[in-house]
Each structure stands twice: as structure tokens, then as C-alpha cells.
Image (cartoon, rainbow, N blue to C red):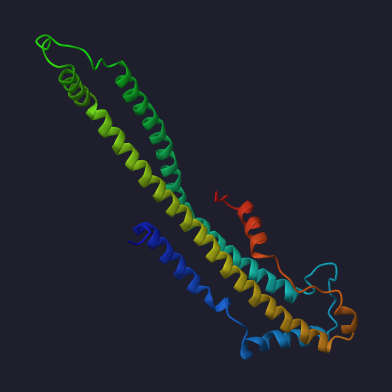
Amino acid sequence: MNKYTINDRKLKKELKKFYANKGNKSKGVGFFASIPHKMAGKRDGRQSIMLNTDSFLVSPYMQRLEKRYEETASDLYLNLMRVSQKIQIEIHSLETEILRLEKDIARKSKYISEASESFDFDRVEKGEENLDASIVRARRNREFNRSIGQHRSALSSMMRRRVEAEDELSTKQATLDELKAHTMVSVRKVKDNIESRMAIYYRSLLKHHPESANLLSVVELELREPEEYYELARTRNIEIAW
């Protein structure tokens, strides 16, 4: 049996389709794709463009590449939030139901226990005076079971439902974790791709810049890590409770 519900499968399919639309930004940089970055680096190098060496972004062109990364990462994270919120509503409902069931189970268990303690299983009714004590007790047991049977059935039903709800909750939470991990992987692919483009541009810039010897040691070609950017994006939008 598939561990995902129909709604979960639909959400995962929707998210997979979204990733596929972003796939061209997650691949390596091919020869033809690298040409614009080489040309931009050559242009900026020959113009001796003023570089901001106090930041890991060294030129407006690299800032545009970083912005591309941020916009794509934002799209992926916002889509994750949109999809996961649907599951979170179900998680909240399940958590509320489990808490209610635990209270009802405790209450029903206490009622059955107190009823059993207070019931007189040795009580002799009229006409039973000459019966053996074991027979009398068997009758009282049957009477008690009839009177408490409905409550026992309700208790069993609640306990079964609690197990089912806990399994559903575990599956929903696992789905959320999987969606988050999938998004992280996608964002990391985008990050690696953009950093490759930045490196292509920067190598070309160094080749043509008159101060290339001084620039090489002060520039860091690294973007925010997906986990770091996720936290930043989350605080700017709707918070996700994992």
C-alpha cells in the first residue's frame, strides 16, 4: 500500500512539475551558455570596471547573477511554502484529534475501571439463594459486561483511531521533510550553476583586467547556502512549522 494519501501524491506531483519547469537553471553550464558570461567578463575587464572588493559580489554583472539565484530560490521556497501549508493544515487537525482522543481514552478508561471496582460481583439476587457462588458470580459478570460493553466498544474504537491518526501524522510529517529536502537539493543545484556562471565571467574578467593580479586574492565566488537562504526567505514570508 502506498504510504501517501491521494492529496499527498497530488501535491508531490505538483511540486515535481514545478521543479521540472526550473530544471534548465539546475544544469551545468554548456559551451554556448557560457559565451555571454565570457563576453561580459571580457567587456568589464577591458573597461577596468571598478570592483567592490568589500563584498563577495565584485561587479554589477555578478550582482545580476546573484539576483537570478535569489529569485529562483525564492520561487522554489515560496512554492514549498504554498504546497506544505496544505499538509500543515492536515497535520494541525491530526494533532488536535490525537490530543482529544488521548483525553477521551483516559476518561473512558477511568470510567470503566471505577465501574468495575464499584460493581458487586458477589451480590445475590432474589431467587438465587440456593445457587452456587460461582454461578451467581458468573451471572453478575454477564450483567456487568452488558452494562459496560458499550463503553468498552467505544474505548476500543478510540484506541484504534488514535493509532491510525498517529500513523497519518507520521506520514504527513515525513512528506513535509521530503518536500523540504527536495527543495534544498534543487536550490543547491541552482546555486552551483550560478556560481559556475560567475566563475566563467570572473575568469574572463581577470584575463582582460589590468589589475587581475591584485583582484584574484580578494574575491570570493560564493553565494548563500540553501539552508541559510531558506531561513532568510522563511522570515520574510509565512513561517513554516517543521
